[in-house]
Length: 342
Image (tube, rainbow, N blue to C red; front, side, top):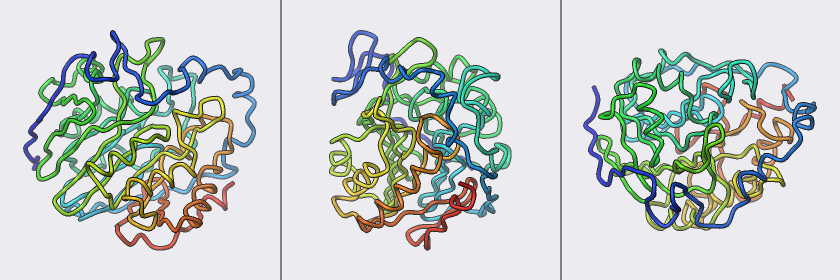
């Protein structure tokens, strides 16, 4: 049974807020230009030898509880995450496609199959999207969810145009600017700042990018989307935290684009700030790794660095296999499943 959705602060159009220029959004902190983020020679990218695991990535098919939990996470690979909070289910950045690309023939392909089919997902109360890059917003996935779910789609300003063009009814789309909220049942879901960029094809930054706060009456969760590190994490914690769960990106970093993707060490710092300055508070669940090869680092380097940085900081991490469900606040010890296939 779907819970009612109320959209307080729903925003339309593109030129909104301090980040807007004519038909363009920008970050509040200076960032490397989008053009410079794609200057690596294609031959160098094609020549990567450490970008894939030596053996198959282990998958899990987590049993679906009849009722959503108090606080739990299922990671399906890359940024695709199902967050259970106070009896609600929020599906974030679902990407079930084979390639993170507009083409079915070229572009980054999956390092592992999807662990479950979209038709096997339980009923969700909302789908949230962080931005319109192909590895986070997949047209076939959205079209499938349109028919397999009846939940609303919560998107940053401007992204709704993509969904409308793909046949999603306008009444199922809620567009929000940073700082604006909507109600999903008993939850308050807030669109919050991220440090990134947007665009599909040659068009850049005409849609907003975002992270998401998902707060109930007792539990607080944060989904980072795709972002570089910034001072805004502490501000989000002041306004909406501290959080018991952070789902943060840890991969696809590179010296050529230092501001649009976090390093694993920066993710631990961001978690600490999102948890009110207490590194030992809450649980960090990493994402944006192990599914698509989007940078020059070895495929498992992000998780190795994260586990080391978290141990040094005293931060609890949970590292599920794709498809695995983790219950919080006590996820248990980290099983380094990636070590056997690297």
